[in-house]
Length: 262
Image (tube, rainbow, N blue to C red; front, side, top):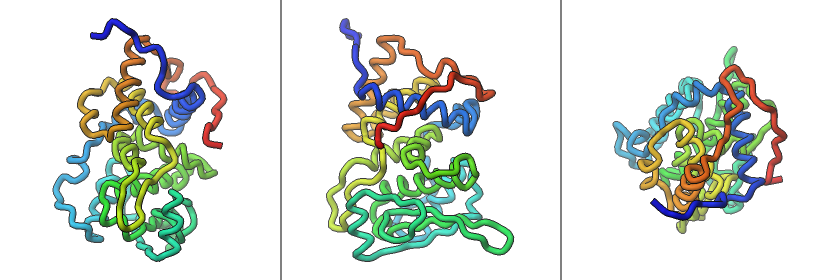
């Protein structure tokens, strides 16, 4: 054990407060006990029962797996694929536009089919060659379904949508996908949150639900891992209290949520 306590969070105060306050918003939207019962999901759990070969059938399997984790009826989801030069250009700007089917790595939309609503997810076909990034995009679009499709929120909030993955136990995949990847197809990084914010959010959630923080470390990329470990140390060294005023009835001290990304 170190004789020197960690005295500073590895994220700035505003960003740290955003993670904590938005976490409480997520508790209110879904219920704390419901989320705490969700296990941390590791790569071998996602790929259990399959050998990924980059086929559309593999994507269907991943969508089914992730939908099950997020308590979504996979039969209501339709997958479409897009490709093209315009798509490539916008991908380099790391866009996830939630309603447009052009120029993005992934999009979410709702359409009526007869008397039922169908949730359509459009994926850039290049993602099939990059399963780690593919999974992160699927998680992001299904998070839109959980928030907007289930009418928990009525205005798109991309940062909230990204953060939701952490509380559904899927944060490893979203966090790692933020890291740049050199590739011939123009795929570099995806998402709205920084690796540092993910590292901090993962540390808060893993410790809050009494999960094994050491088990998650080997699965994190270097930047996320560094912030995760520093955050865990700070929280433990300083007996840092967070989310203490929340209870599962939805009552908690209402805090002003300032979005540091705006």
